[in-house]
Each structure stands twice: as C-alpha cells, then as structure tokens.
Length: 359
Image (cartoon, rainbow, N blue to C red; front, top):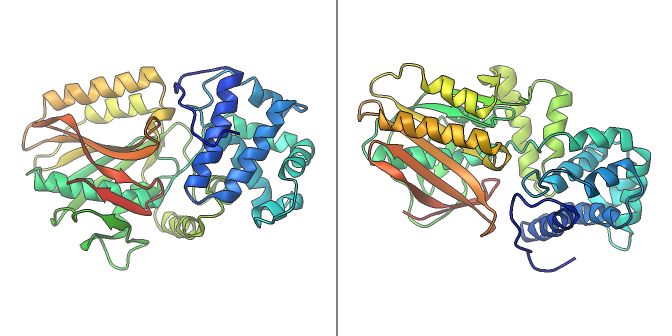
C-alpha cells in the first residue's frame, strides 16, 4: 500500500476507490496511534486482491462511495466484535500486536468461518460515539457566551448514536484551566490544550435532545458491545469512558429518538424558543454520513431560522467534523444574529485527546 494519502473525491465509487479507502485508512490509523487497527484494515485490504467470500466480494464491489461510507471501519468493527466476544481466538495475536505472524492469513480464516456474523456489519455506518468530543461543544458554548449570546443553552444533536454527548451536562471539564460542570461528574475531561484558554463564563444547559437513524440503547449489553467494537483497541481510555457512559445511561437515559437529521432539525426549529435561551444544533463526526439531500434541508432550515433569530432568542450551529482534504478535524461555528459566516474555533483530536484553540 502507498505510504502517502491518496486524494480522492468523497463521492468517488468503484473498485479503485475501495482500494484507496482501505490504503488511506491504514495510514490514518498509523498516524493516530492505532497500529493494531491499521493491521486489521491492511489485512482486510488484502482480501480485495482475490475476493473469495461473499464478505470480501461485497466490499470489493461496493456500490456506494467507500470513503464517505467509512467502509474500512465497518469491516474492521465486525472483526473487532468477534475478538471482543471471544468467538474468534485466532485474532488474539493481532490484537496483542504480536510480531512474526501473517495477519492476512488469520483474518482470511476468520472471515471464512464467521462470514454470517460479519456481513451485517457492512449494512450501516460506524457508530463512533465519543464522550471526549463534548469538550469541543462546551468550549464553543463558552465562546458564544463571550459574544454576548445568552449563556443558557438548549442543545439539539443529530447523529447522536447512543446519546453519550447528550449527557454532557453530567461531565466535568478542565479546558486549559477553565473548569465547567459538576465535580467529579460522571466523567472528567482534561484535553491537552493548545493555544489560549477559552473564555471563562458560567453557562447553563437548559436541555439536551438528539436523534439518530439507528439509536443505540446503552443499557442493552448487545448494543453496548457494538459501540465498543468501533473503539480502536489501542485507545484504552475510550473503553473506560464507554463503561462510565453505560453507568450514566442506566441512571438516567439520554433524550434520544429515532429520526433522520433533516426531519429532526425541521421539527425542533418549529417549536417555540424561550426568551433568554440560545438554541444550539451540534454534531460531531457525523455530517459525512448524512445524505446530501438531508444536508441541504438541515442547512436551509438553520439559515431560515437564523434569519428570524433575535438577540433574545439566538440560534447557533456547532460542528466538529472531518476535513478529508486536510486530514484533520475542525471545530466550526455559526450563529444568528451576527455570526452567519462560518467561524473556525480550532482543530481537535477526533476522540478528545487535545484541542488546538485558534482564538
């Protein structure tokens, strides 16, 4: 595989795009401290050379856009689930990062013996719910409060997965020395802070509600396992966070409904907004999975609501999403009235390890 990212259109389809998606994912994993996941993805990539199973053929002949669909991570999630459940012990040496073994042969054998269990993992996008991303949302709210918007926030999230970020008011944050939230909190986050600290303000979360086309119930062990399978095994802290999120959901489930992004945003924006409350749409690492027609509807709905927003009832849009050209994650914000032009607040680690604040 190439040692440099190959620039491709997110919408590109076909066998070459599939191979490029796997090659790029291997390099991305290596660059982000995930050598074991890189090994799994690379081994899966070798199956494309001579597809000998329905699982491999479905990947090789993928009808959609493999990069936009996160196809390599769908397949890798299925392999990881087999390892976590203990039903594919042959994978253990790879996940132990052992040397001197043939990853491709091991993975091919596992696919051959567990194909029925693996095929459903190709049916939907990865669920990459990560509590560490909440730090970005909180930092953005602090910045909004500094612009004079009411520091009382009614939060709406699309692509909520299991609703882990819908419990952000239960977590404690230390953002470059600026502390927010209950202490100790259901979880505590101290991301490596690069740049100036965010503004210091007292903020209040008035409500949190989210949607997902396939919401995950954290209180169901089988569904929780699915989320864990998408966590890269190298990231042990994320497993600890997942256990903490499960406990928090068992104490009080997040407000999460099954609905697509466009329908949800349109319905919520049509509801009355209390004076002195800032309504916020937020999302993280999900926009690429939202169909283009729904992206357009969400944008239209937000801009129409923004045109009607007032200083007493403002609207904001906080997004932490991947820039696939620059290979980084960007925290971008818009607000109404007064901040219609997208504002980049910073760059961030996809799983919350660090935030590079640009203000």
